[in-house]
Image 1 (cartoon, rainbow, N blue to C red):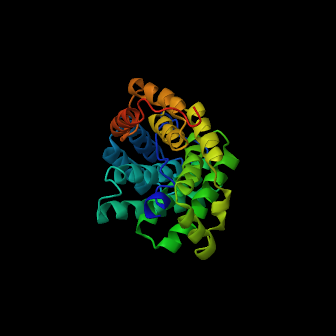
Image 2: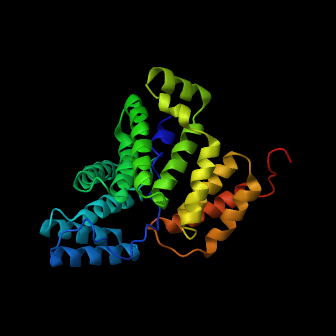
Length: 272
């Protein structure tokens, strides 16, 4: 159960439209805005460590700078996810905890922003790595809650949409025994809301909202493979090699896509 529950919010993939900075929740200090823009530029160049530095500088100048706050949380997750979950890493776990703290502050600063709820949902998923099984089940409900809050504010938010696709898929990937145990003994009745069909609907929409996003397509292909819809999966995987790099993990995602394409070569769809 551990591996699936902690990856429910693994939608920390690319393409939220990071090229311009938001104005509605940002502080007026020009120095903070300049550091924020430098951070965005570094992020677009996939230099996540430099982006983090600029976002932290922006917040040192103006602690009310909302966009720097949520972007700092996101970039901390991006730095941490470069260390696989299978590797024990206190440094990575500490980054995830810091990201959740920053995201929580972001939500309190701007409770009407989809970006704050999106990154809060994502960070909860990552910090679940260090929690007990019961706590991970409880946090699965929070992941869903905050992703849905983001979508209520901004229905076309591709990353929050991705999170909901992954949320459904990861719960459905649990064995029937694991789901029964979570629902009946750990308070995870919200798991009843999960389905493969919802996983496809959400992830397909994430791809439609951001077609060049490698992680969206890879995650959709993985779900389709789970459902033995190999032909559709191959269609998405075949597109990935030609997509531009954006996220710091995109080179790895391309390798993962190629490996998955190889594993399903020659497989026929269920019922055919």
